[in-house]
Image (cartoon, rainbow, N blue to C red; front, side):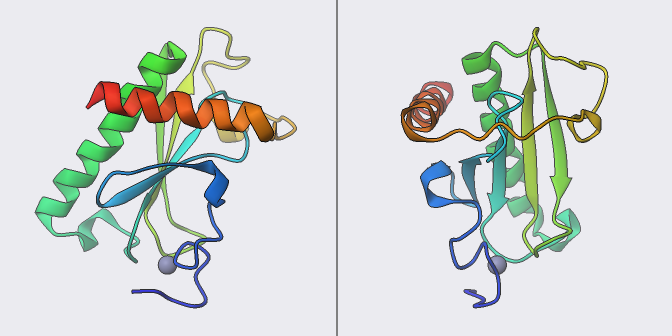
Length: 142
Ligand SMILES: [Zn+2]
């Protein structure tokens, strides 16, 4: 289960100070880059790189967990639209980038990867406050 060569298994990705919640099959973290405010990553806790690697009951539960995060982001950030990107190319954990797109979005018709920008790193009180808002939001949305 705990692979010594895997950043996610070793707890070094995503960073622990970005941790928001453990939902059961997944853990939720604020993404390092907050250029799109509220950008969150939902990481499946064990190794699996495709949805078809999961048992049907796991797949259903995982989608419920992603859905809870999306609903929370929508409420907390008053998003106009939520984007979902299911990746797992760089490490063997399915993970969703769940990204609220706000009314102030600089490129609302483009996927975030195509919007050139300097990463907006969040730290200190700003990071704590954003994590806490989402923790409370998840409690409220459950
Ligand atoms: Zn791993």
